[in-house]
Length: 122
Image 1: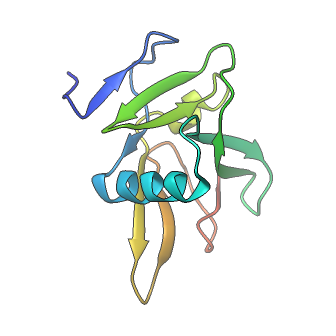
Image 2: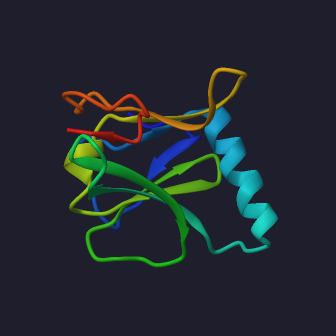
């Protein structure tokens, strides 16, 4: 079931996509506004590397690639490519701004283990 704040595009359908918390969506929206562009979306990808074998990449992108799954969170579009989708299915992206943690965090139920820095997993 989708809510008004969360709708999936028809570019590609996935049974479960990533979830962007309200706090993270507000931060992404603010960062995009700082860039001064309205064509950017948050792309979330998984790439080989890091101390645990795979690492997350979050970056702004204006491209649309074949197989992308695009999910809208209150005006913020999150894009996941076809290859990263299975690794990110059901993952929650949040933003922390505390003394003990700063930046985007990913809670991924597909990660068997992760490194201490939290940037890579397997």
